[in-house]
Image (cartoon, rainbow, N blue to C red):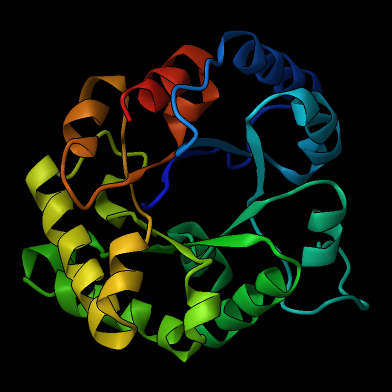
Length: 250
């Protein structure tokens, strides 16, 4: 039975005290509904250690937003998978469209990050998604297939630890959201590619999340689709009530 997940990406928001306040609000109001449903928070690096301590006694899991391709070394300003592991990180984003666009991360770099995370038993949340022009030109399936290609180099054992998040770039932070039908169409396509490249059982158990202006008002409709297993949440993750409302829609 594949895991249902709602993960919140804070991006570059919340100073230390703001992060602690939001974390405490989440802890106070979070009520786990099912062992197969997971709430994950991916804050900036400055929050990780303090949040790990606060999450010790509850079922909220900690995620990173990024990691380096190397285990250690002279990489000023970077953070390794080992460092993330040492403060209790269980999940980490890889390949978010903002990392691809602003930091020019390519497939080789993303693959190395995935390998580093897997070596430290951290589950990668691998992001993929098309630009608006790709969607308008009907090339969205080709874009997704190209972005997924690097995952097929993983062993079946390693691949089963990867979570995929479909985030149409045109819907991230824009207020536009893919319809539930559009999301289902892509998620079904992703699952079909997994079945072809891995096998049917692995495809059936893969968690595929939707990201892109998901909020409490549309989460239930999105999550009702058979191939949508949760969400990767941006802006709505910065408000405890909104974030938990999305989780409760699983």
